[in-house]
Image (cartoon, chains in turn purple, green):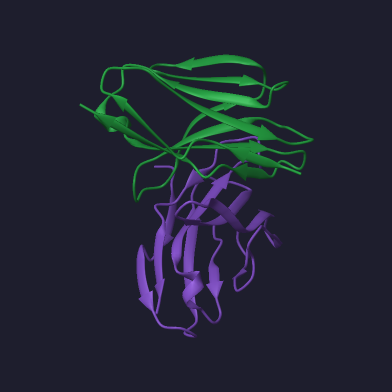
Length: 113
Length: 109
């Protein structure tokens, strides 16, 4: 089954404790992206990757890191999480950026205390 | 600059028809997407319009007018399961997606 898998689905943690949210897709997609979704603000892009070893900042990259060492994986790293990073996070992938439908993971609800 | 706008919330009756509008401004355009998102779930793709006109997919249709910077999603024969948020997003000159904040559609029996 074609899918984007994110883990964990839910996480409650404390300020400053490094965490990683994993994302993996099995569709051989070149383009992958991370979004955060907050009430009233819609989806905001954090980082995206056009291919292996190619990553770029989105609209709200501060406080986040990503890597793309393999085509299928695109982890999101919060080195020193803060309460303003409490949000619902989605990973997405597609064949091409901006001209093909994106497939979204089920989301990760992150609470930083 | 670039911007995109859609109503925050709409209410409709089961069995009826509803039209959700989306307006945008951009200097470069490479198509417009509609996604459906049930509460707490991932967005799922509904439609992609790159040329003017109406595209129909079962009970859902999407319309685009590039000259007016306008799109709408038309939902017919509304069912309770259609209660969800509907997100529009356009692809700009760099194929970057610009997302609207979403329209929450409430279906009443």
